[in-house]
Length: 250
Length: 308
Image (tube, rainbow over all chains, first blue to last red):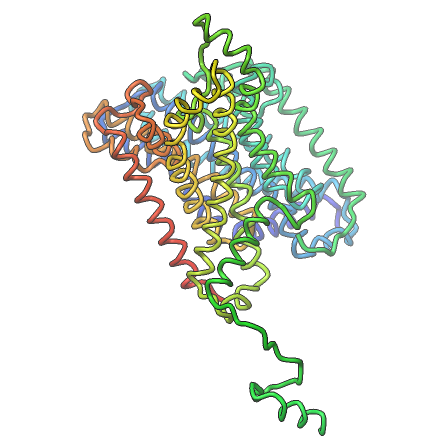
């Protein structure tokens, strides 16, 4: 029998196939291309402005719409597809430790979400921010950090969610709109519990993006994200150990 | 053998594959009655009547939250009337600014309920059962659209009614107050009708493209968020660059243009709230009507093509 960790890349590969071979991946590509398109429009208007671009495009489009939507689709899809089609049975029947299954599923979703969101901000930054000089380069790097941290945290949150309910996608959207969208603006105290703020906070390690609100220092953001990831993975593993196969429809 | 013979002999409607079941020989009510039945049934379904409690939660919570501020204003109308007399009542909800303030809840209502209306029929492949009967494809689509529009209109009008009652009670003489209040409140009927039809057509047209409710919902969220953000961004950039055409883009926003159209019905001015001053409120009304027509067209087109 092979060492358990050696199956990890295999599960990652299978999960890639499950997540990518759909029409919705095409729509996600279009979504990720949108900030790049907006950057081109900024350049066409002759405007190279780190502040305008950071608040106008990075904050309102990349951080608020592209990042959570990408993460919720990949995060809930990692187990969702197996669960819907019943193939999760074949995965759970193998002598693989449950934490490895959780880790590889989450890893696959994180890799896809990170590559999509990072590609989106890097291309946008190349078009709009790099001509602004060293400030622009630093801003692009900060945006990359925000996207990486944000993708990891969102996916870590949505993977266990999809193991608890079949309506994870809808609940995830509700969370994204209500908690991250409306409430974190109205109640500043939520900053410690908002992935959006973790992502912004982590980005200040590189460069302080000129955004409306930056509520967490970088080290707090990193510590809180790490706690979130560990706790979420532990819950997902615990849940998968007690997983009951459901034969019903959605 | 003999049984089959007897049934075919007594039933002139028998065809090649007559299994011998009893035939329906009541009145046939036809296409319009079928469409009406579908309308009533989906209207009940949107509010969760005839379904379990869990199906009632989303529509009633969202519509309740939408009506909540008006209900509060009604409950405290005596206190408010006192402070109006003293001249320090600020930021009260009126008929004209209610949707502008709380429209986000109606977006959530559409995101939650529009997929309920159209997705399941495609997912469980029951559309042929509709289309082989008297009702045609466009009748089906229009009946569904009418039901979501009606549901939205009801949700939009409840707080209007609460405001009306509150304002009447605040007046010194209730009957005189009705006389002065009625003309002020009447524009809310056409305004909310436009809001309801416009939002319903957008959300049904988009929802009908996926048989899965979750993907429909995510598509609707993406559409509403992006179509609010992107035109505003391009307009903002265009102002620096002197692009005079960029103000037209604001007309494509789904919610902002509805808010502006509401202002037209109530004769309020737009310029105070960051709208492009090059466009009058009437342009937004026309844009909303055009968008409702366009998305109804998309919905009909979808049901012309959808595999049944």
